[in-house]
Length: 170
Image (cartoon, rainbow, N blue to C red):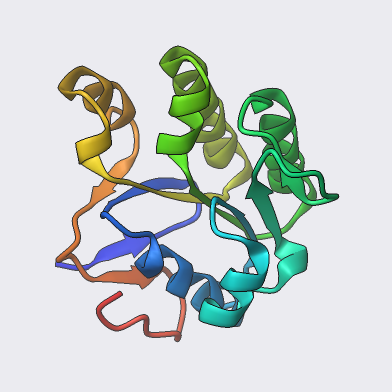
């Protein structure tokens, strides 16, 4: 049975690589959603590999740049994501780099970020998609992370609710 990505939903794709999640961005855009991508992958690379416009990407990096967010600055990341959900119709954010964020912060701080985003997505009828490599987390950390979102395994097919766009086996 396919997983139907719907407004008000928080989804975690279990995967070693986030490519599947990135491919969905163009499908959401074609279906009339407003998208934002927070990633460890450089914006130029995302544009080249997946056609994601650089202006819709925040890069998790300590490098200086107008659309760069330091992994230690979870407050700025949170603020940008909340403002995105509050200021857009049909908002979809994809967040890649949870492992990187946990590497630079206390796990509890990142869990609070996920819980706040979960609540915001429900209230604002947005969609949040993130990807995790389960090998990077302890069993206890995974239990905390997986409590609220819908988990999408690598072999599961996903669809976009109410869309004529067919993401096939993404």
